[in-house]
Image (tube, rainbow, N blue to C red; front, side, top):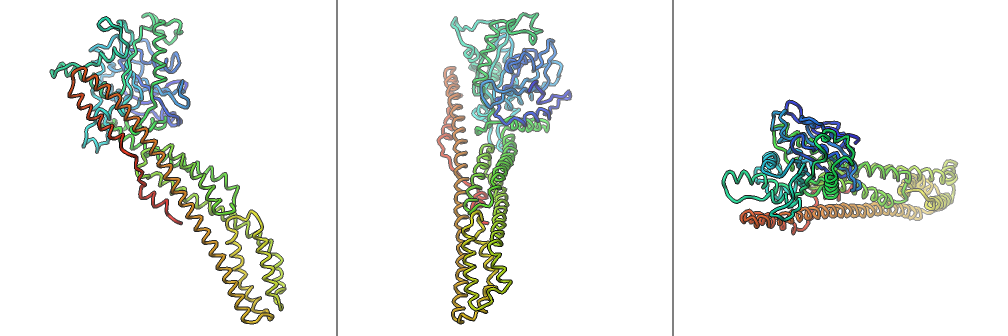
Length: 595
């Protein structure tokens, strides 16, 4: 993208709407996305910081007056500077607390949407982290009222706990602009992160003032799984601040330039891919889908639910996964049509199995939360239909070749039949000798395909009446000899049919078993990967919660620490559960469904 576009429009009447042009752009990004969003009061330099992340002097509108320039949520997608095959999605939000808006509800929804869409949330403020800065971040205290982690049904049964928020919310970065203090506590140097942790410490007590003081701090600690802080000097003189987008780096304050590089390096290296509960990493297309889901919920007057959005996204993504897998299957199968006919049914099954396997890999890569393998079953159903069509093409190609070959090899014998060549004493022996020669020449010929025996059998059946007539007319054979000849002929025909049927059943059974094994192995692999991602996610939460618990104990909040320990124990129990593969009943039946 050369320039940013508005992702979520904030209309003057207070309604929010997802911009279709932005959705079209996102739908083209199949790469994983790292989503970095910035929020904060208007006219605090948020847009400038995002332009730095984009590697540009301008892009997001800066403005140089007291009016807020950004309305809604604007988006800029750029190649990730250090993560190959990833897209960095930058979201710049309209300033919070803009006096010209008049409707504070919009600020709360813009803040909530930014949290829902981002994998890293940057909060931008001026001066210092003091009580006024905390008060300006009061939107964080409303998140539990603006966002449901679980679905509507689940929400009625169980309230969200801290681990659920930490699992789904972004990492938190506080940027303090125009910072003029020294990073010292009690005369000792401290880091920027320690400065933030000191600011987030809780007070003891139950008074209204203490509860009001603690509430935003508790929310930041409970909702976000990691906390980082950067402080910035003023970038330029007051006069030059109005022309920042026209200034070269050499004209900026060296300390600000150095601090900006430090901030960018951290964001590039540490900001994670946008990930949904369960470890599913999102693409641009998926980001657009959940943006629609969240905004539609707000427009309808309901509270956005992460679980509902994930369910809706899983349906859309799984449907796309089926289509992508079928396209892959068709492409690969169309390439082998030129090889038709295959010499055997087994050869066709082996070629088809390779195409089936690669299509299944595409599906497994793109799908997620496919409950009871509903969409895997749909894929298998469509593949079975397509396989039958390709198999018919293969058989028809074989039959055309075989019939053409038989027509060529039997030309002399057919002429003899018409001319009465075999209607003479000893004619039956002559006919059967020529027929055996024809069979031998036919069987030696290459490239006939899998219908070779069936076409030959059909041809010989067609000649049975003629053969019987020739046999009956041959005076050189006694009646008992004629009966023996007929019995032998019938036995040979029965043996051919039995061979054809047994071979077809054997090939089909083998193919069926291999297909079942392939689906189960890939499903086990996917479930194992998902389980491992879930365990990694849980372990990250456990590590963070242990750190939070240690802080609570240090601060004297033993009861809160005990509550946190209970959540940690539950997460550890989840990690110890084994992965159990249970095939859905529909998929199980289809895998063993014989034609």
